[in-house]
Image 1 (tube, rainbow, N blue to C red):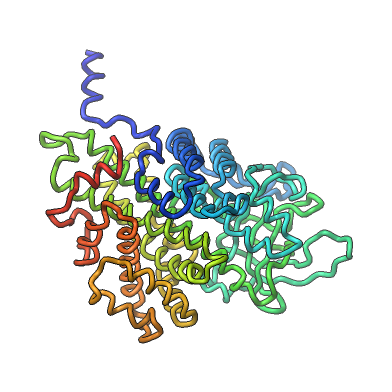
Image 2 (cartoon, rainbow, N blue to C red; image 1 turned 135 degrees about the horizontal axis):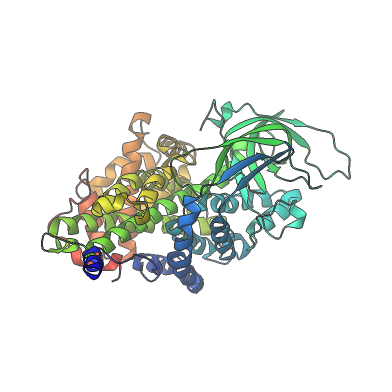
Length: 545
């Protein structure tokens, strides 16, 4: 009887998904790394793909299950404002930083470095998205800090391939991580409404302490165990960006108090908090009154990571769905051989590859931006276009993938619930959908080079010229787009850009993408591809057996 029970219990359930080599499984990623100029880093990316799909994915389960805990006070009642994480979280962070997920672009600034780091970030997000928050913020802060001579050591240690979670001042650490605190209760994305104040304080010539004192609060204070935080506050000259250290140069804890950790939708491995500043010391980053201008470069980089993160979620979700359907039999044959399910899976696969392709094309533009004005203009606006559309697609995408697993998809161990909780995040972080669309209109209006760059890119899209009539005027300095129509306009740009990138890449899914999303509007649900598309090849390309 026991043997019979074991045999029956194992019938018609798919084998474990992991460990899997996320690099070898992903033909679209391998092609994008080569196409966008990062072939020199392919070996290192491949090694991380194997690590992410094996050890890191295994570590991620307990990192999520055992959530971070705030310890505001020590046994004697002194404020320590410390957040404790599961050891697996630290192991994942160490692996990511040592492999360059946070710093490769800056530590080894060779051609293609940004593309390579983008690939690493995409792979990492599939295994453990929570830690991607401090990794992204650390990466994005480096170029801004490097422009301040007095903060160069912070930039260099943020780019270094060393993870050190100890609470020590900068001088005593080989590497650091950085968090951010921009939004407040009353303003949200409208950071000009911030009320936190920054008061200049007199310093002696030999005093290494930061010369501003910050008083106020932040409603979202991300990655609160970071070594430093980029924050916005009202200085005498207006809204200004500051670097606020966790530990002062003399080793004392800075004057901030964590109020609570957010009980949030999304990942459970990372911590977000609310904080109050009580005269916390900080260094100015950029000129007084130029806070928003200072953070714009960071925003471009963090938006790219939002695109990559959502593309990574899509990739892991569709891989899980295809794996399940290949091994699950229903109504007499594997689910993957049921015509309607094949349509759903192929539709998801096309969407995932288009998201990755556009993200990696934008990464190439970021890589070239310092020496190519046209690519810089393209990166400036394409990050907003791509963040809006790719991140907006992620929640419905993951929901459809979860449905492919049926009830199994609702079980935490399946990974799909974790992906589903995470899916809305990137659309909200670094500006919600409306913010992205309005930023596209703003860029086209105030920076004509951005429209010209988009238009050049779209000339290679395999679409009828009639379909380009709508964006022709706005991209070439003509008719403006009403604010109320911004979402429809940006969606059309995103689809045209994805079609163009896939076409230029010679992707096997390019024709299917064009037929299902450009030549005719995509239906409201996945699984609505035309009957005559080569679905077998699409599925085999998406996940090797």
